[in-house]
Length: 106
Image (cartoon, rainbow, N blue to C red; front, side):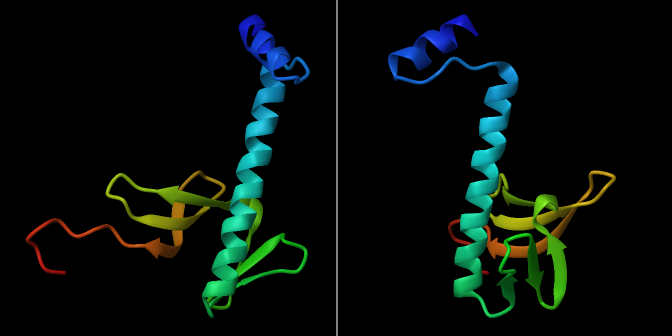
């Protein structure tokens, strides 16, 4: 932590703690997700972000934003998933399909 805080001081930032770093990462993740969902809302007819940015409606089904994650899979596909209370991930929306391997038709 000492080394991290030394580097932060060089950049004009205040010292931080491990919990402070985790908090910053979570805030960045939440802000990034809101930005992505706002773009999806503008581009897709079946996706609607609530005015208070707390809920997302996909095909008439409402999901709470704090339970949604944007996932980039190993195969290159991208999807929006809902994380259940047991930790299982349920696909809500496939944003991007996996690229096709060379020489293989879809």
